[in-house]
Image (cartoon, rainbow, N blue to C red; front, side):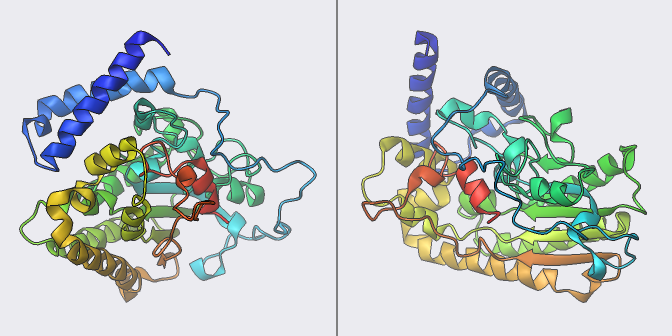
Length: 366
């Protein structure tokens, strides 16, 4: 690594520590002009690190060619396109898309240093990544491709939302619940303009995964933390109605966010200074000392958020023959495995001890 790069990283760490001391206070850095500068810097870093070959310890083990796909794909696609969502088979899904934040964008999945956190490794993200095959990157699209090789919409490389490699991966770093309606409209428009997609004929699977930034940056900034749940109800219902009214033959999967109390617990007991700094900056509402006395209340807010998403998914208005919504709870109370020392195994997290790496993305599909 060059001296310039080392100095840059040192400067970044110093800046991060200042952010820790500020502990989630909004500043002039949030102005539109400075956000524009930030995007330019992110694009520059992206060009440096994107699409590098990865030889890292925190990857899934490659599955050899003599190991067969664990499911029988025979009959996995209907001989005739089903008219009801209740008769769907895996291979009947022709289009896949996703809405979310940095976890859906695949931020830092391959990161070895803090700079690489700004690279969006969408092609290997669990919900929407379709790079390679299930043998190298176990993702939902790579599983569905075994049933339908003509699947449309998955991200196939490191890319920003605006770039071709993202396809129908509509996810942004820092996205919150309030961004969902706009993302839904953007996705609808993108699907309509895609010449490969027949909106009325093709069945579509759309994942929604949101909440982490609301918990980490917004919850401690508003007068009442419970207001983020009230607002999320309005925003999620609006989002689902946009998708329902514009995209027939659509299956919506709402992935409940993990309860972040487990992430807080994972940082106890001898973790690095880097983890201390990055978690303070990225999730100050739960890690900053000034909010410790409210942490239990914040945990209850997160639990209520999870319950609310399940309730909304069950609303009768979102269930008809050509449209349905389900809530997926498998991350709801997820925990990190323990290492040989009895502590949380941080090899399942990216270099910032917050985002998920490729190994944990693959684990979500098992």
